[in-house]
Length: 232
Ligand code: MD6
Ligand code: FE
Image 1 (cartoon, rainbow, N blue to C red):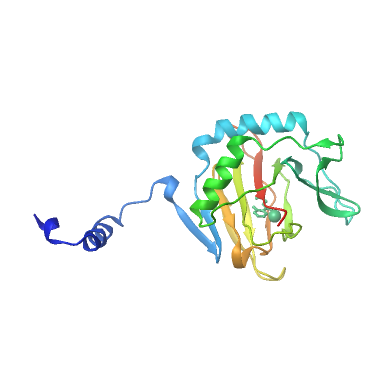
Image 2 (tube, helix red, strand yellow; image 1 turned 90 degrees about the vertical axis):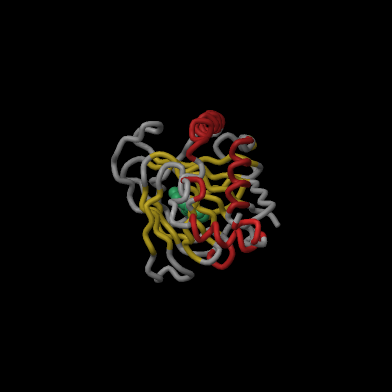
């Protein structure tokens, strides 16, 4: 037999040659966005129902709210958090806080399925031992958007951010180190996960106004979860 005459290395080279025409399975579809950043198409899809139940439980304890920006605007995105720290914005600025300012109670604990997903996605993208203390839950209804911004309120900028998209599709803008760098556009679909860090950790990014539509599981909504390591 042919394979008996080949070393292990030769065999794996040959099987790559034979099989790299096959389309990747949805779980394996990886698309690099920039240095340090990767889009994992459909990575969260198989656990969508479990994620939604956990999101509902978080929202019951810490209701969604439209926060004020330091510049005096009301965000069109409604947000809440879970984990030991939550991201908050008000007239005095952006920060992470251990207490929900609306209830003055700790944020809901991070659901086990959230942490599991975030760690598996980070590892898949090459970031081992990702331990986020915070998950920001952003909810978009048609017309809601997120202007170009950097995520730089975290003390640990060496850790990646893991971002999970659920529900209606969105156009995601992924720019460069300067606000004026022309962003690339990506359509993020239900179940997509973006992991980013390294050289692109401080890239400007945003979300265009959400188009109207109806999603089978979420209705007229998009939910984005972003997992962050805050403390060093
Ligand atoms: C969103 N995401 O997808 C907004 N930030 O709705 C973010 O702002 C974001 O996806 C940091 C890292 C990943 C993200
Ligand atoms: Fe962001």
